[in-house]
Image 1 (tube, rainbow, N blue to C red):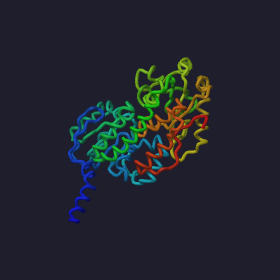
Image 2: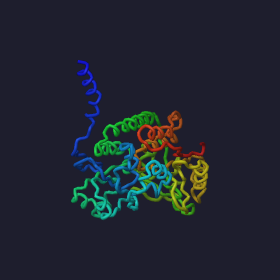
Image 3: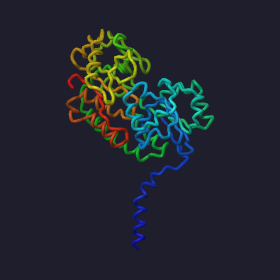
Image 4: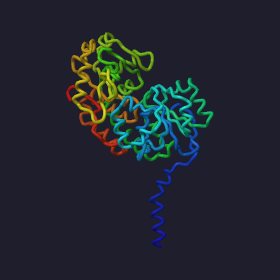
Length: 375
């Protein structure tokens, strides 16, 4: 009788785990609304956008690189300190084939096929390039599944469905749900408080400000995608959404001055090489260097004439939140800038460390994610 009770107890303990186990094949609907069948558990993954390693870090926690056979190592090119942290923890990541293309979706078909992949994860914004180059059709002909995720075109709407999708594709539903619950709780709290906001601030945000140096002027921006979508999710009115015919583009300083935004914001991340004046946000960076770069950018010709700049209504954030499943931290940070009284108890940096400690095994190093003149 005792043995029977013991066996029944063990069965009850493991029942939830068995219920969560993934059966193969699995058919999913990706963020392009395509039905995709994954015949077996993926073992040889290609990442069209290397920043998706941060999504894998939520799901394949022990080693997000273990199943990756080729990727576009954007962290190395655009976020050097994140790359340094990742390769220190998982040094074998340096041996993975880097396809060395831009982040627009252009990949080399022969390179992909040579790695014998059984799954490609791609960003939805890259689909036009993948279709035009014939990569998507060729992979389909070779029966290599391709799933599209999206944290940029529609960041708030698509981030959690993307994590749920990858959880199902990789057989990590439980871990996906853990992060989804955390993210949704934070987002619900933000929405509840923003419902009490009366006047929405008009915002101009300049992503990767200073990437071509201090003399190249201002002002590149995003429409409703990327940073524009995050500004709007945080209760702001994004100037780029009103003016740009496409996803990104430039707005003259004169136009910005005439629209008189309540806030002028910038983004940046530490990058390799010289000739850039970008704000070096990221892991293990010197806050004094961040402040110096921020002030130098504000002093650019024309930019210093923007009323929000002269009034001190400025700030800056870590750039890669615009295409990153941790973007809830950017929404929190922006909300706190726009509505300091509504969000004075919110600590976005602490929430970022919670993500890293509780949902990944990325080393929890010091990191600078934002800067405002009052801090």
